[in-house]
Amino acid sequence: MPIPGIVASGISGSKIATGSFYSIATVTPTSGSTVSFTSIPSTYKSLQIRIAVITASTANPSLDITYNSDSGSNYTLHQLRGNGTDAAALGSAPRANISLSNYSGMTATYPNVAIMDIQDYASTTKYKTAKAFYGQNLNSGTIYNNVILLSGLWMSTAAIDSITFTVSGGGLASFASGTSIALYGIKG
Image 1 (cartoon, rainbow, N blue to C red):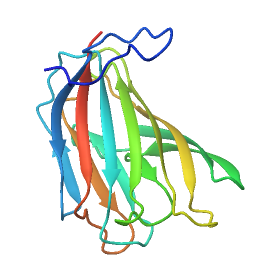
Image 2 (cartoon, rainbow, N blue to C red; image 1 turned 45 degrees about the vertical axis):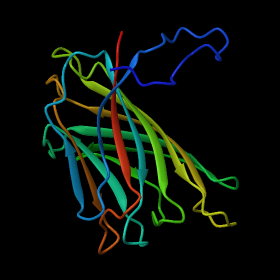
Image 3 (tube, one colour; image 1 turned 45 degrees about the horizontal axis):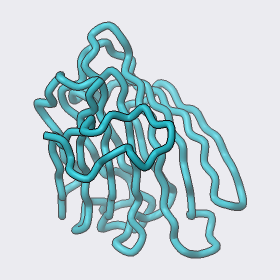
């Protein structure tokens, strides 16, 4: 079912078709360290995930993402990060996940937010590419006010039918009230 209110009429020169985003599922965990979307239908061209993460720990947790329960060394990651003072880049391969790490706590006052797209997720002939734009603003002069561009690759030709999100690091990291992870399908 199309998401009401999403229209492209205000975007000049846009090729976005009205009604092309479809809600698949939303989770709002208030505890625990892992949530999953399972039985993802293969009827869309790509997926979009909208994330607002709040954790019970402020000690540098990250949000790790895996597909189809694969936690082997089948992922790669590249990041460009800026905070208004410094810029940095990193690459990491092979890895056991795609990690949205922001180097600071994800507290109720300052949640981490992200939009992540996974291209051709249902293909059985291509590796799966993800791109994300995410960050956090601690409303201070610290180095933790980050904006991050990320690309990740899952080196598998299997269609993605499940996505798992795990809060890791930070000692007692777990999801807290206010977290929302929404999965959308995008048509052609």
